[in-house]
Length: 267
Image (cartoon, rainbow, N blue to C red; front, side, top):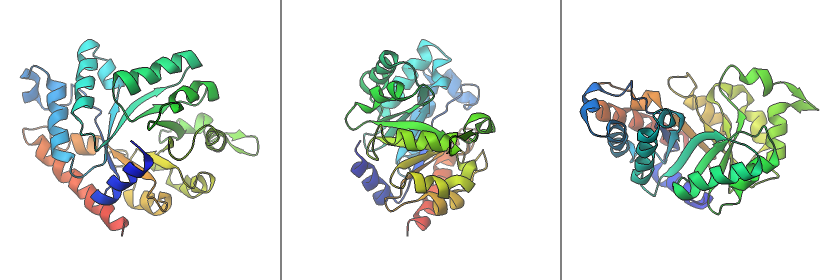
């Protein structure tokens, strides 16, 4: 998906919502466990319920990989089921030496048709560039994350600034605003003004809204640029809005609430 196509979807739907399909088999409604493919069945119904209110889906691959072949097959079926109009993110946090990263890129961009993958920048340029070589695919680099451990490295001094600032400025030279995004946690809203100065044109994937306590209003006010420039992810708050047979209906209601609030900020 190109940058222009993504922006068009955001403006058409008046939404920059990304629904996180962090599907934990121990948390899905019990009545689905008797289905032949309970994870895919859950995801299918969540997608059907929320697709009108979001522009993106993010699959946290760990929840699928933990189940072995069954989980991997459920992930593949889910990716294939997501409409082509929606931006599909593999939240895999890969990053290794160049030839290994090339194989990761092939797995998620060719074998499975994801539009984007999250990547850890710790090993530097040669671990990231294989992902950037794919046309109309995106690399989403970890910038300033929402977990408390961000203070251990990301917020530590590095040269004339902080380490996360070094990551943003250095990585911006590897890609461009049409193929490189950054992960910036919603709970790091105090830093958004500084981050926008460093990367004024890039998109941010912003997790941490909802169950993790990030403020959609604060993020929208501080992080948006002229092209909107943000995808705000909500996972548990939407997909686990109910653990009963009405789970899809409740997910739809919550996704619609997010979309309506976002529409207000886009005016």
